Length: 258
Image 1: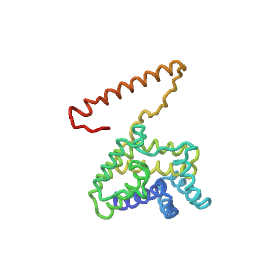
Image 2: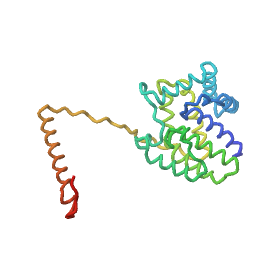
Image 3: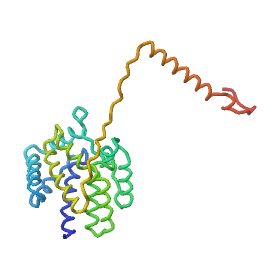
Image 4: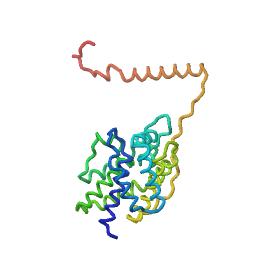
């Protein structure tokens, strides 16, 4: 395997995904996407992903990048529709900022790459940040920084490989996905390629984390009044204990007036 030529292709894929998954209000956010699509269409991973790449390009050419931006917002930022979660921590623990974010930040600290908070408003373990991070690592490797080869392997194995399958399924099945449904097909094919590249197996399916809402308890007016009286009594007892004059001011005779 000619790693350098393969890394060039990998960089194009990760660069395309960065353009598609990083949230930004910049009007030029999708500049270069069509050119990247053309390169990948000419050198596809397989027939299905090639057709999917063509579908994304057709969407942009016929409907424009504003429609693509609107679709992104409807998938990831619209409270009216089902917002798609995109952080490793959420798929790992059911929280938006968990252990996986710490892992990525530790990886980031071992490089010369620094997060531009004006561009990246999402967490470090979000899909957009991860694909951009990988793109930057590959570019550094191509420029001679071979010391980052192991780090990119660890980033893929410990973070990306662990949750991208579930994310891709959710993206493909999202009610507002059109161009992004096709992109999910491309991302799925590329994920399998990366597993071959790093010699990493697909993880075993994990039990899906469901964050259950708290059940509402019905209580009578009498019971509610009793609980409120007890609560106030506990607060008063606590306040009395915490505001003991002896404990607060000690035995100092030179205390001033309140």
